[in-house]
Each structure stands twice: as C-alpha cells, then as structure tokens.
Image 1 (cartoon, rainbow, N blue to C red):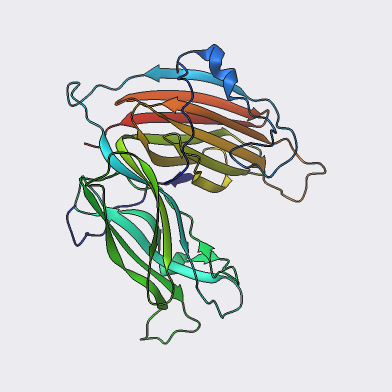
Image 2 (image 1 turned 180 degrees about the vertical axis):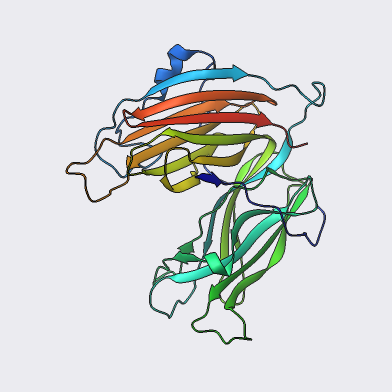
Length: 334
C-alpha cells in the first residue's frame, strides 16, 4: 500500500504564478550515531506534542543507514526562498442542521511555481467526500490537510484559491450535487515582511467562513519527508506522523491513519534555512478484536538541521513488531 501525501497538480490555475516561536536547539551532527539517544521521549507533563497516552513509552532504537549529499544543479549557487507552510484549515460558524457528520468536498490550493497548475493542500471529490464532525456551539470543523506536491514559494505575494461544498441529501438528477459553502481567492503578500511569522486568516463565504493558519517563512528550503513501514504487526498499525518547522510550536499533521508493512508516506515541509524540522512518529497496533492483551506502542522524535541539498536516512524500531524507515531530502525550490 502506498500513500502519497503530495497533492496532485492537475488543474490549470487561472493566474500565474504571529505565532509563538521556540528557541532553536543546538545543532546535532546528523552523522553522530552516539547522539541519537537525545531523541528519547518521556511522559513529561510539558510534552510539546501533547500526547494523550499516559503510559510509559517503550524504548526504541535508531540506526543511520546513509548520510549523504546531492549534487547541486546550480553549481553551488543555491538560494533559499520565502515560502508558505500550511498548518491548519477549518470551517467556522456553520449551522449543520442535518443529523450525523457534514460531508465536505472541494479544494484549497495555491499556484505551483514550477508549472502553471494548482498545488493542492486540500482536495476531495464528491465521490470521496470528507465526513467531519461539526461542533454544535461554534459550528467549527477541522479539515485534514494533505501535503502539497512541492513547497509553495512567494515572490512578494501568493494567491490562495478555494471552493468547499457540502453534499446535499437526495440531489436531483440534473441539479447540483452539493451546496456551496465558500468559494473565491485571496492574495497574501510578504512585500514588506522581513521576519517569519505564523499567520491566522479568516476568509468569508456564502454559508460560513474559512479559518486558515499558515507559517510565512522567510528564506526557506524544502524538506521532503519519506516514511516507509518496513515491518508492522499483522493486524496493522495506527500511525500518526507530525512535524514542527523553524522553531515554531505549531504541530503540522503529515499523516493520521492505518498503515501496513510496505506502506509509503511522502510529505514536504518548508523550513527556514539555518533552523531545523522536528519529526514525531507515534504508532500503536490496530485493535483486531482478537488480541487478549494490548500490544506495546512506541513513539519517536528527532530534529534535522537544514541544508540546501542533502539526504539523511534513519531506521527506527518502535518496538519488536514495528520498524520504520525515515528519509529527509533537502532541496531548494528553484
């Protein structure tokens, strides 16, 4: 099974193309195996990843299988670029009158810099709508983001396009298949910005507003995160993959779902140069209803320092049943 988090860029685009920051930790040499023990997690009350499981985590083991560099196509003259990293997307103030969950479909995208296409961070067709729970008091529902095909760059400004609908009950054969919630486009500018920041924007639509949270990162590069499940319990694995970028405490969900041995997950995260990206993997065996006792669970986290071009491979053993390969590939956007 393969899961590609990078959003497809298939549809033509109509136009060409402050959060709390954590102090950066001292850089850890990526080829120093002895220092890998610094990644050990614990049940501290101030855990920044807000773990919900109170049980102690089992030990895990990390090995470096490869640390290397990639030949530079720019002959060493590489440049970072201002980039956007999406953190959260949710509808707000929606009056959901129907019973059950709201069935959302549509897209949220930005123009791709390499080709004149849309770079999706959320995309659902009506056939695979997203069933979300709407909070009755606030009318809020979070939409799970998907990773874009590549980093979203800004040359003084960037355009966001969006259209979200909700499935209608028993639509007429020739009628619309859903009710429009919000549709439009908006422009975000960094023309007079000199520092990175976390931005919260509210976009207003026909039925409800859309809250968007993203990091506007000055002088950033791309971290392509490739995760492969090398070994997993026979019943499957409940897998959560998270990231934090450029010293900010905001958690970016990269994957939340069930995975099996052989599953591949690909994502991209924008990171400010001379900082790092933090990754965390949480895995628990899927409950098949047959096990008499709960199998061990595990969690792992580590940080990776930025560079213009480079590759770091790690193999992580969460427990005796689960082995995961993690590869970080650094690239500039141009």
